[in-house]
Each structure stands twice: as C-alpha cells, then as structure tokens.
Image 1 (cartoon, rainbow, N blue to C red):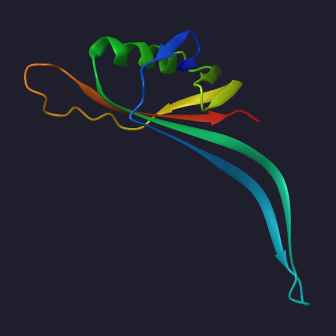
Image 2 (cartoon, rainbow, N blue to C red; image 1 turned 45 degrees about the vertical axis):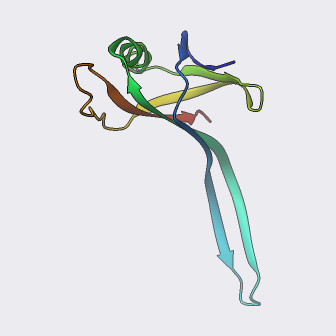
Image 3 (cartoon, rainbow, N blue to C red; image 1 turned 90 degrees about the vertical axis):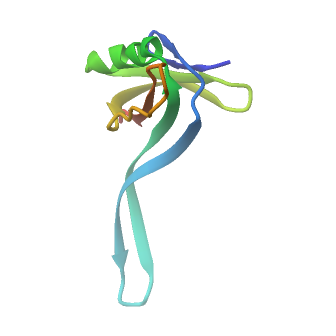
Length: 114
C-alpha cells in the first residue's frame, strides 16, 4: 500500500492533496443566465514529505531529473488511483535544523497530462 512514481515507491507523505485544474469559458447573458463551457479538466496531486533522509530525497529527485512524463499510481486501501501520466515539479526544498542527522522537507507537485 503506497504511492508509486515511475520506478520509485515513494515514502509515506505527511500530507496528500488532490485538486482539479479546469480550463473553461464563462459567459453572462443579458437575461441574467450564466453559461459555462468546460474545455479541459485535469488533476493535480500534491505530496508533502517531511524529514526525508538523503537516500529518500535522492530517489525522488532521480525521477524529477529525468525531465520526462512519469507514471503515478496509488495502491492505498482508501485511495486507489490508477496509473496516470504526470509531469513532476518540486517546490523549493527546505532543510530544517535537525541536529546531527541531515534531513530535508520536500513538496512534490504532480500534474496530470492531458
């Protein structure tokens, strides 16, 4: 039960959000009616990781550095996501003060391909 990005099994994220990006046009008619035409709808998955070890961070970054379309899926019991082609983005990385252990906080943004 996990999240899989390309060939990597991701560590358990601190938070996971799933949102929709919609391309549409909206018109307000003289009679007060509003019409909306949805041209495209795709999903955006955001995974927030905290306190990653260097090995875990490097595994995620190896998928990002490919700069290619990757496959993302979830096999969680309560959340099943079929294999979806996504583009991988990483928000600015944060290095918290963690004593002697080198750790990293990372936010991974996966945008579904059309």
